[in-house]
Image (cartoon, rainbow, N blue to C red; front, side, top):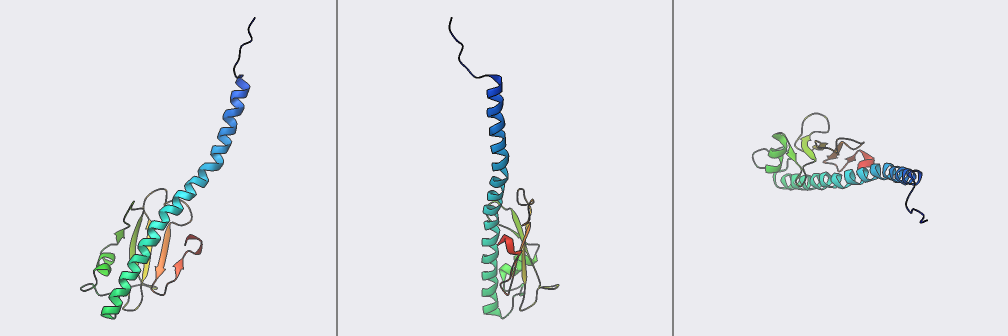
Length: 137
């Protein structure tokens, strides 16, 4: 008589359970990694826009010149969506209320998933170089 070879139902269930536990621990870490890499797109775009605004300030002695500063006009007309995957929309405001000649506040707000979940839904960069929130930069 020949003995049958194979897995028992218990062995298969244990294997599936172990794979499920590993996947449950790995998936949140994977999503966090994806969010961080997508956030890099917003940070890069914020820094680029800030540099372009600084060029306007150097030439015009003001940030808020809609006629001669194309980047300010784009931002003031409702904002720009980040290039690449478009996970964030960037708008301009002021440190208090309105952009002024000498100060601004750029805000990148998450508009697509998975960026709309988690702690870093909005990134800000001021004309003074202040980057908030701290844990997201």
